[in-house]
Length: 298
Image 1: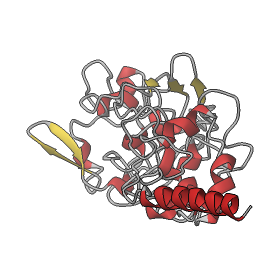
Image 2: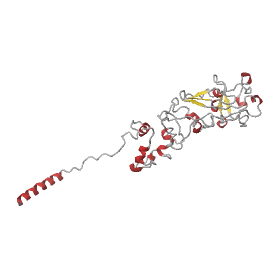
Image 3: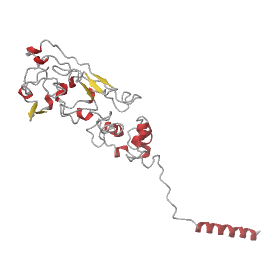
Image 4: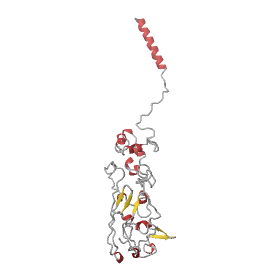
């Protein structure tokens, strides 16, 4: 019996020694556990997180499950604010539309689909109304859209394709006859009733594009096709030649005959080589005549 016990002891000891002598210390490190694919943080990748969120109709709840409701780290211990540095983190306006690196530009370009060309419906003339407006002061977003109260506001993201256009007070500005100008007396007020044609992408009957005293009230503008060269003759004057002078009484209008805009609107416009330019944007498209420096309301 003792011999049998000794035999098994020797066998088991040998097995343990042999097994321990073969323990490897150069085993490969276990891969890091992650829920994201390799291109998750690469903008050009098909697996970029911006594209995945867009495909889920901008549902951010799946992000909050790991990164916390305020995106500050959560169980993932990875803060979205490392890249999304503005208040609100990934819910900041310029994350989805606008310039991601410029917090002052929160409207297209860039459009939701990434487009930056003004010929794209999601881009259009946003810049010409806002940051790059050379014809007048910047137009507020509220003049064309109802602004949501935060990212999760039901009016912000819905199942209707495209942004709703709801005109504000500026486009509806009611202009009338300035006092002291007897030649205007018969025409009364101008009450714009602005509209946006979604199919054509065009605006009509807006104060800011011609629906005012001596303006081209039938003017229709395409959001994706604005021409700087004919701008002066588009809203008032001759849209064919670009001549900015509104029609005189002899032409069926009421504007005083004059060959030069600078004669009366001297601190608003200038002329060089026959080409007009705006010298003071605050006095153009502001609902006032600005004659001889006086900001008289239409």
